[in-house]
Image (cartoon, rainbow, N blue to C red; front, side):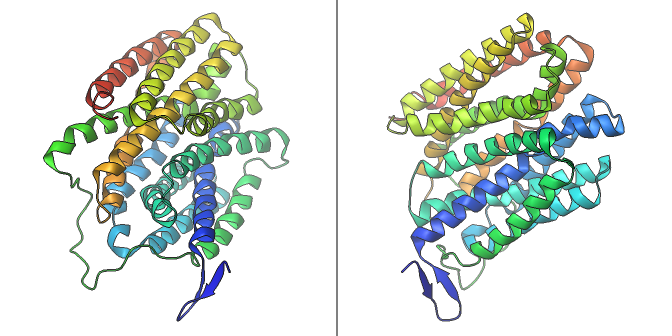
Length: 393
């Protein structure tokens, strides 16, 4: 039987609970990226500059970081299920804000709320999935796959829906609320402590010998997310201005290709050890960065999508290896906290680099900005590789 009656309420089995959490996590992540191809429609409607898109996008990343810092670790003592529910309800609130307050201030607030929900969901769902069935691969595949689906769904709504700035948010609002009900039935995997510890913000609890390895993994995650943020926040602008391709559907297909490649690469190379995954990921990201710069210089759409595939595959392998490295450094009582710290570093990569690139594109040609971005990214990846790839087997 997959459903059982516990002393006070209905509960599903660990196997079904695992699938429920995975689907809910993927849906929340897809919702977080569904606005990507819709920003051009908001711009067209309200006439705000392209840089404001990066501000709206950065509001999401700031929400994630604040949530991770303030609450990403609390599921270690409050319980996974309760925190997952809070995160899903925050995403539902963000969907309602998109519907009820579609002006620029509302977009910023909605993205901030969405980021706050994803912040608590990310570390909590990753830990919960590993405890329900302990598959090293699933959480990172769900992460990349969920993020990938959002832009594609948004692009399809932008191209074919009669009301593309309201229909996707209404659909996700209903789905998120239904999934919150389903998550309320999954098994709890953390034994709640009789005495709760005094609240404190996020901190890193690792043996001193493991901190060098954590720092390297966190730096690699920062660089990988900076690359993904470039595709999610600025792909429509790059396509329109550098490649002369203003298609709304392409604006969604580009980040879908990048993040979809990340998910597929994690599956295809799941048998590789951590060290080969890190090396492969860094090489692929570096190659993708070079092709991305070349695509802007040559105004080549095929090169742009080749870059998105290679960079995405590298992002997937590199981030999965980083997450595996960090999870192995923690014990059961601190795993949620340590994963929250990793994701805090990763989502920091979505804020500062994207804002700086957006600002730079106001002052310099896109090809020059991309070249500078690629050089900084390669330096960060090289530094991360020296701290991690040589230490893990």
